[in-house]
Image (cartoon, rainbow, N blue to C red; front, side, top):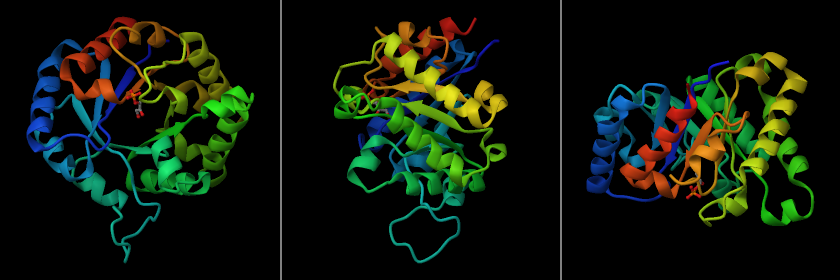
Length: 255
Ligand code: 13P
């Protein structure tokens, strides 16, 4: 089955107006040669509207976080899904390991955020992944199953047809240590199987991204794995040339 790869750049809390303008310009300029890849950038929140305005038609924009609540209210500092949608976002990253580890995003809160995203009409990119201690303790599958099951418990699978899942092993994020293609494939296969246990059709259509030190020189091997449908790219998405090279690696797989 022909797959459409999704390559997403997570810019985290990096950049300023001028650098972000230059980055968007650089990425826009390279997109015409990537018709088979869906390309998404996730800038810091203050720049979302501007990036959505300047992005070309083939560049989608996503947020890095969303309020767990589904309605507006007295929630200082939070951002409602409908607001993200209104300024031009189509996607939102939910449950990134940095938010789970540093900002108290528990499995239950992440599940609420996925639901809030769906209600707002945004595509949630649900991040899951184990720490190094969990991997070394043989708990990888248990941890990922728990992270997935929390989402399935709150959102009926019929509502999850737009869901994207990103497997991001915590030990590979920003460390330069990528999972081997085989390690990535093994976990992606496990994730697809876990989805299939609740809904076989959904398992076939859900896009599974790999994230964690993806670079131009390792992207092709990772994207070549049967259950890898794209990538969530951190550091390398902050340089247009590197990000486009990673997108090109996806394009070459998508024949
Ligand atoms: P790096 O690509 O910098 O390892 O970051 C991965 C990530 O966290 C993307 O969400």
